[in-house]
Image (tube, rainbow over all chains, first blue to last red; front, side, top):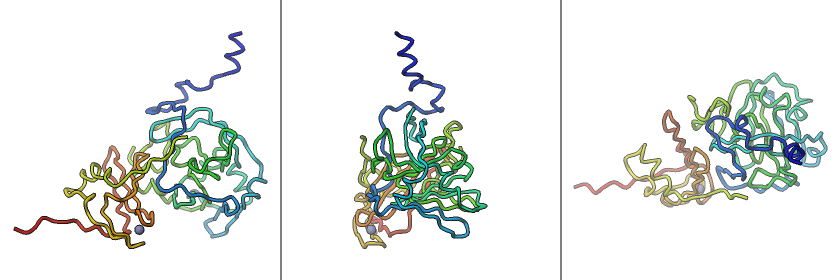
Length: 199
Length: 91
Ligand SMILES: [Zn+2]
């Protein structure tokens, strides 16, 4: 019956209300890089939160996988104008990673293997808005897409979702990252088309 | 899966011509990190996003970031080497 088919597929894709201005819906998953793809063995991987006082909290890969796992189902938006709807990830909420961290910082810088950085207000990383993810579409996250683990902040342009992430540094002030220094927008809200500094 | 695209430094000629009156892709570069000597056309260029990133072919250090925005061209020359720009012979 048509009704069942429609119900089963739900509103998957094709919903213009979910595509921000200036974006189109992509069905593949383009790869964007600013350098060689780091190959990080999970035996050597660690994730570290460093506070503004220098206190560090670190997790090995096994410790990270032992934390509460969440399954975000989200739409993502790249500044190169593609959006991808209904993406499925598995990972750890940034709230979980910050649960025992004492800080009065208002900002964070995400650091990646390979040297990439990006800055975000801490309030955009908390309250269920951001994850460190290791699985995409049921498979371990491929190195080209940021594996073994990447940041996922779906409500901002995807350059904020740092690939190969290895840590967050909490900072009292805003410290522009790799693209933000070079003219990309400091915040990057796709619904307000904040692509470039001055937008 | 889509692969990242890595290009050579010749793709910088167009964007840089908005800023410089000489063709920097023909300029020789001496890397201050690894000592690599080559012309800028041999740089490794990542041009997937609105911004361009160029890296040293010897050590992959960041050489250049260039972002063309509606408000201007943002150019970071990185400070990881010097380029020598050939000038015409004196008459
Ligand atoms: Zn070099």
